[in-house]
Each structure stands twice: as structure tokens, then as C-alpha cells.
Amino acid sequence: MLTVLAFQLCAAGPAVAAKLVPLFPDQRSGLTVVEAEDALSTNMASEPTLVYGCSGDRALQCSRTSQLRGGEPYYVDFAVFVDAAGSYQLWYGGTPPGPRDQYAPSYFSPLTVALDGGNPKPLYREDVTVAAQYSPTYYWVKTPALDLSAGADIIRFAIAEPRRVDKRYVFNIDLVLLATADALAAATPDELPPGFNTGGGAAPSDIQIRSLEDYQSFIASSPTSLAAYASLADDYSLIGDYLNALKTLSRALVVAPDKPEFLLLSAKNRLWRGDVREGLDMYRRYIAVRHDDIHAYEEAGKVAAWSGQYAESEEFYREGLAVFPADLSLLVNLGLAQLWASQGADAQKSFGQAEALALTKPELTLRLASIYKANGYPEKSIALLDQG
Image (tube, rainbow, N blue to C red; front, top):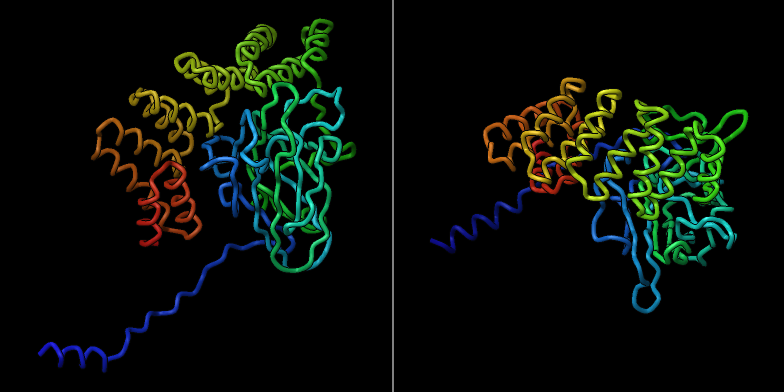
């Protein structure tokens, strides 16, 4: 009987699966964006860091005190594809490279950039344009253009040497953007990373990073100069001196008590220093004047949940949902806070709301799958994609 059954199964032949037709996102010809969390290869970190304010809420971060064994550099490889040969602008979101000038302030590590395994080319601060800052310690950086043939290429960024201020190997990267001049000029905001800014205009910007002493001297001579306070606090944050960053911001808040930039930097520096209670309280002050900043609800809610303050976490997320009622990230993180607080039924309700919204459009399904993955729940991401 088993022999007959086996013969019948073989005679029936293998089942033929229906052919899947891939659905690719619309993308302008001559424009490619690759997120750091989608890098081809890296030894900078074992996984991306959750960074609210970055594209996709994730970035690769490296801050090491020593080289790898054998002198191998810390690097990240990006696989890119262009459909036509030409000259392409290469931008990235992250920390600028350190300076070539030995007397210039060195808060970042100098870099190298290489194409398809070729010789690495040095990349110093003097070789790039720092067009704009879009999040604390993250800038839009324009590097020298690349001449590419049509097809696939691999672009490698590597840390060439430690920064001089403390001999650490420091580089953070959010994404890379490769574009022809025409494609970039014609691109709509929806086709570009959130907040992307070339610093263009009649007088294109190139942000200069000055020394701590320069900013301190400028503040002493002009104590109402708000930009100097912000830059000095940024520099202190970059080198991990959060106490002096907070002292600077406290002076700035005396001059401008409700300036959102100072409140946000103060909240973040308190959290980076480990003062969770003070950081969350400062986020309350910030949200009171900038209730339209969705990242504030996300970060404050997440930090509150990580520190076991689930009721306060849920409060931040619900306040955010009152302003952004259909935001998938806020719904998922609300569900996670409820799950960690042993409120299983409420958590499933929040996840269900997010999934019902996401399954209406393929791009929303992909967005929600990415949110689940970024928050450490790849199994929920896979289950969602199976449904979609």
C-alpha cells in the first residue's frame, strides 16, 4: 500500500507554486538612497542603534578606544545601483569627517572612501561640505562626486584614524544618498530623506565646527548670542562632556527660557548622562512648546518604558497619538509599553490597530514591518509580511 501511494505521489508530479510578481517602490532615475541599517557589511557595530530623529529611527554608531586586531579599520559598505553612467553627488547623513589641519578642533574621526574595492581616498573636513544639521550630532555631508558606470557598485566608508581630542575612533552614519545633479534638483520632498537639506541658496552653507574656546570667548563678549550657546553645547555633547553641555544650556535657557532647541538638547544630554527623571521632565517642557515633534513623544515614551515607568510611557504615547492619531510607530510602542507592563489585552489591541492601518497599503505594511524589526520583534515583522 505504501508503494502504491508513493507511486501515485510521484506520478502527480511536484506542486507548481504561483509565480510572485515583485512590487518595487517608485524611485526617480538617477537617485538612490540606502539606509545605514541596510548596509551590505560593517564591523562598526553588531546592530543599528535606535536614534529618534534619524531616517528610519536607526543609525550605525562607532565610538571605540582602540583599533581592531591586525589594524583592520572600522568600516561600512553600501551596495548601490545606478541605471546610467555619469557623475553622481555622494551625500551622507552623519558625523562629518575630522580635519586635516592639526590645529583645527578634532571632534570626529577622519575617514576614507573607496569604490568597488579600489584604493581608499582620504576624506577630511576640508574635502566636504557640511550643509545642515538635522539632529543632534547628525549633519548632511556632501563628499566629492563619483564617476560611475551603469550597474552595481560598493561604496566603503572607513575610519582612517582616531579623533585627536581623546583618541577615540568615532563615526555615526544614518544613510547615503547618491544622485545626479539633475535628479537631485528635480526630486520632490517625498523622494528624499526626511529633512534633507543641501544648504543651497544664494549663499550655500558650510557649517564650521569651531573650538570650545572660540565659542566660550564669543559668549563672553556677546552673552545673548543664542547660536553660540547651541554650538558650544553640541561640541561638549560630541566629546561626551554632558555636564558642561548642561551648564551651557542652563545659561542659554536663562537668556531664552522657551527656546525649543535648548530644551531638546537639555533633555537629551540629561538622558545621555543617565539622569532619566530629569530628562523626562525636560522633555515635558519641550513638548509643551513643540507638541508637533513626533520624535519627542517616541523617545520620551521609550526611555520611560526602558526605565520601568510604564504608566508614564503610555502617557507620552497617548499624548502623541492625540496629535498624530494614525502614526504606526506610536501605536506599536504604546503596545510594547503595555506588553512590558503585563497588559497583554491592551497591547494586542494597540498592535491590532497598527496592523489594520498598515495592511491597507503595501508601503504602510513595509513601514510597520520595519518598526517591529527596529524594536526587536522580527517575528512580528515576518508575520505581518506574510499577511501582506
